[in-house]
Length: 306
Image (cartoon, rainbow, N blue to C red; front, side, top):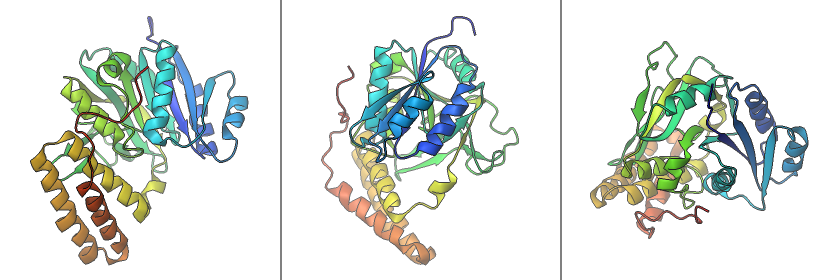
């Protein structure tokens, strides 16, 4: 690609050395000519930052956080470094993702065609089922406080081979123009983990920007582990889903979302999934936490952009 914009790819590591190694190994093979890799170690228990620094010294810069700042806080550290380094685009990438060598070129080419781009996301597959789609971006229902990854679980038969607008770009791999970050700001650290990328995409939409899915870009996500998620994970995910509605939706949507989780999803686990009754408790805990939530709607909690 001639005149290739400078990209900074940010990979967050937290006690995930094996996955991060594999992710960085796939990034080594990327054909894009102007990609700077930043690894943010989020306070790993072992000295994984030193190991990564030694193994990838010629390829990646490693930043050490003294503690686990969550996905939002850790990525924000990387974004600030990318801005200091003069990046024109920032790519947020999960450490349990491996990438096709041409994915970044495809994403940049698509991004440069979209003057109103908030973020772009690729066609993501399950790593253990490489022809089955994990996500092509997603849609959100503010009335119920739920999100849906488009194409999830479908075998790829070309049904998602057209670029399309999405409510949000999946945070496992999202390319953001620096101009959009300057308009929207950083990720909201109140989420810590889960829903922070969706919140950012909706804040971008309020600024007149849109998210797009790029089918020519392909990545693989080790998502199978998250399918056996714990009740505690379910609580944090649903708590943040409801917090998202309270931050980004209106008062009526907040009420309907809370009632849906209280009166529909919670009882559904009791009646239909007795083996997962802990998830009913998680739903109700999420509702109770949000009843006492006092965050401001349009004031995301984050440190200054620079």
